[in-house]
Length: 246
Image 1 (spheres, rainbow, N blue to C red):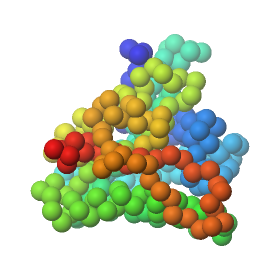
Image 2 (cartoon, helix red, strand yellow):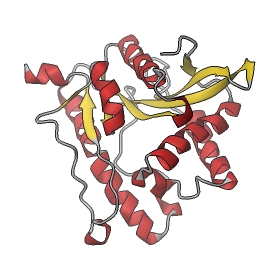
Image 3 (cartoon, rainbow, N blue to C red):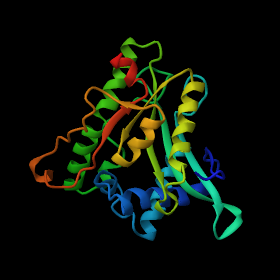
Image 4 (cartoon, one colour):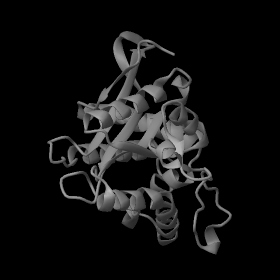
């Protein structure tokens, strides 16, 4: 693990070019995530990189706040000394944490329908819509459960966690996750959730996340025309899973 890793919330619009590069290298080039690439089909071009960075900036800029004045969307950056210039910091990883709730003032209502679907072709729009509906179904239903029965009607969700493949295996992802876990405590002891890939779930489990029930990967409900497409292995994980099994 590198001792020089610095994790902090984004503080400049200039950060998003490097942040989107990290995310696209991880999701687009390394694991070729079909859900992510459906929404970022032009990622492997200069124009696509600019568009992706701009969308992240707009998401950061438009973040709402909870009743305590805290942002409901926090975009983190992980930096290391730049190998080309030790006097500069290079963004090598990023995470997006969101406070989600169906109760006013406690977070943004989660959805299983992402923004920007209208920009896709009809076929890709159907594919992305069906995939995200399956991907985020449990996130949405858990938020509804908390709104009805919990003294804390919100949760802190790790929406995205990515490390530039050139800088992986240095403990960067763990630090991005740990920051969110501590922030959830600062926000009153919120439960944390995430949709975990096989690579990510090892880190999440070590930091206290667990699977619900038998721990089976989610099943994508898609039309016949999409059955043969690659679909990422995803497991819904939460930090209070062990309490439910007790």
